[in-house]
Image (cartoon, rainbow, N blue to C red; front, side, top):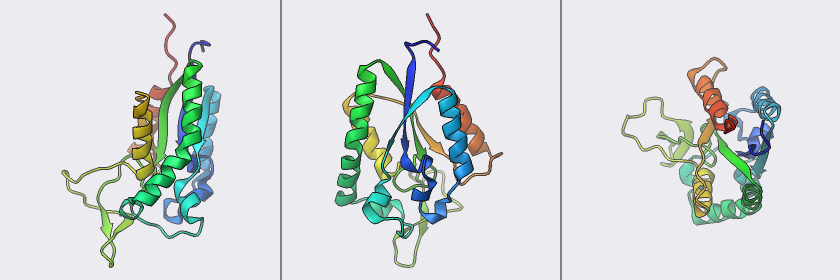
Amino acid sequence: MSKKDRRIILICQCLVNPYCRVHILGQNFPLSLEVMDYLLRKNVGVIQYPCPETTAMGLMRNPQGRQQYDNIFFRDHCKELLKVPMLMVREFIRNRYRLCCFIGLENSPTCGIHWGRHKVNRYGTESPNPDEKPEPDDPVLMGIMAEILTEELGKDSIVVPFLELPAMSEPASEKRKLFWTQLEQAVAPIPKE
C-alpha cells in the first residue's frame, strides 16, 4: 500500500458495539467482528459516530420506524452528534487520507441506506417491520442520520459510496455477498501511477 493512499471509512456505532441496536435488529457480534477484522487487516482506519437512537432514547427504547424519528428535534440531535466525526473526516482528508465509504445498518430507521415501505401498526404509525411485499414504485429513503450525513458531506463536496451492513441477512445470502463485493471495491487501494 502506498503512503499516498491512506484510507479511512465512517461507520455507525453499532457496527463496533451491537448492544446499541434495538433488539429486533439483532446483536450480530460475529458479523461486526468480521467487518472490523477485515478493515483493520486492510489498514483502513475507522471513524464512528455515537448511536443517535441510544443517545436520544437510551438502551431500553421501543423499536420505531423512520417516521417517528423524522422530526426537528431528532434531526438536530443527529447534526450535533456528527460535529466531531465530521471534523475528524475533514482533518484526515486535509492530511491526504481518502474517505472510502460510509457503512450504515440494514433496516435501521436512522442509519439505514434503503428504508422502503414498512408495516403500519394499529396506531397508524410506521412500524420497524418491513412490508413483505413492497411495490416496485414504493419510495426508498435513507435513515435520518444517513440523510443528514449526506448533507454534511455535501457541504465539503465529499461523495462516497453508502453501504449497508446486512446484519439481518444470512451469511450466504445475496445481500451479504453484495455487501462484501461493494466494501472490497470501496476500500481497494488506488493503483500506483
